[in-house]
Length: 87
Length: 256
Figure (cartoon, each protein chain N blue to C red):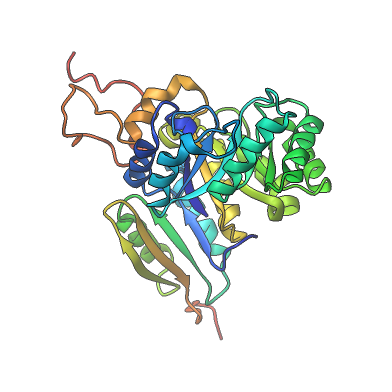
């Protein structure tokens, strides 16, 4: 869109019930090998557990900043799919 | 995106207080509005002498200035005012924004921006409301960048974003989002998540400026930004909420 080379999703202003759906929609729009940077005001550990449950083996999780005010996590879509239905 | 704060959230706070508020929430840019308490104001002499203290403090931080919104037209056509405004644009190295507060008429806002540009100033125009997409098209055709002001307290933010961003995002310098922050819990369903998702997917790297939807929420914003403590007047601020999603808008009532 403008002036950025990577996707940054800052969820701090997003109402609670919209946060996780927005994050997963953004993740699902990624092509294999792509990533976005999630910005939050606390450690999004519960989100990581949800990713592990719903997208096991399909995502990467790397902390770029760990507080105390802002947490930044690079969430990537794995290059190699682990789909159960591949040949 | 660069999450940012408008001085309109703390209109009586000086520049140091605004900087502290940004640090408190991890914001990376400030939008300054003419007439707020930050101490940067146009001067008839155009030399910025009265604003030097605030400019110096601001320069000592890593904060960016998203833009400087000029107030109502006043005597906007006078050379004296234009000279003062041009000096601000140069001193802050930022865009002067002709706000919708200045005039409801988009043609008038464009005319004001054109006069500022003729003074060598980077000038943009606020578009907002139900006609935001149409206004963005008009402003874009006129060759100016714009600021999109969208109000989560009453607008279908997601729908507006879907209509505006694909066509005009490249000309959009920043978004001014009203009604987020400590108000966000009140406005669920407004599509703030959809807006931020679209901005992320479009790799939007410019500011998203948060501001109150109305002055009625001023005290909630002051608390959210660490300018006021909760409850019983304790000085430590230890009870301050760390997430807007958990921020009540009324007193916590512990003294009842």
